Length: 70
Image: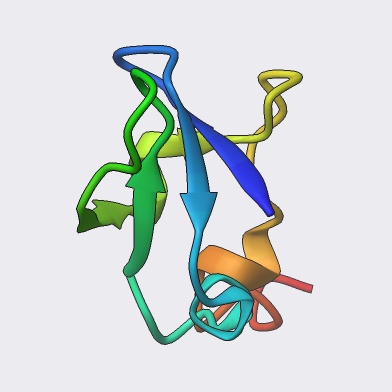
């Protein structure tokens, strides 16, 4: 799955969608898609990522207490 880093606009290939879907994890491991060579894995904060269409990530992926507001 690809997401976009807000600050740079670079696409980030997410290595583990389980990390992305878990609201208990604030970071995910991914690879920046820049240049022709595969980039090293690094950690990205979920708060720094959006969908390529600039939509925010769902609250249930980022907030462990998302159901308390309902």
